[in-house]
Length: 125
Image (tube, rainbow, N blue to C red; front, side):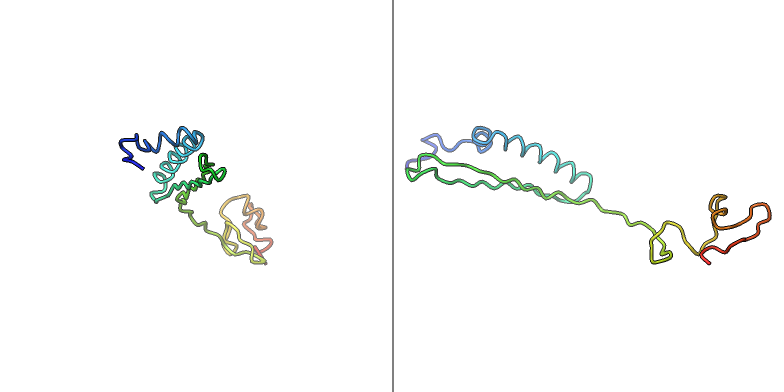
């Protein structure tokens, strides 16, 4: 083996990739762009990895098969919690079952007479 520079060397990795795996080249560019967007949105780090498998076609060694695997580990967005109250039967609900209703529809459902203010049936009784 001689001097690689004198023989022309391997050249640019991007050029080799674009020549032998053009779809991978384009897919990597798209995934990198999406990863950058995810990092901007979340403010967290992410990774993009590519793994190449090169295996001989036959014993002569004059041809190889190149496969690739792309892995993206995108940052996850923070998920906000939701306030909930425990109701009958341990069911979660958005309203406090022990509080008096605030709105007319809620009052009617709670068994209140709007004209007299009389409680016909206590809530959750």
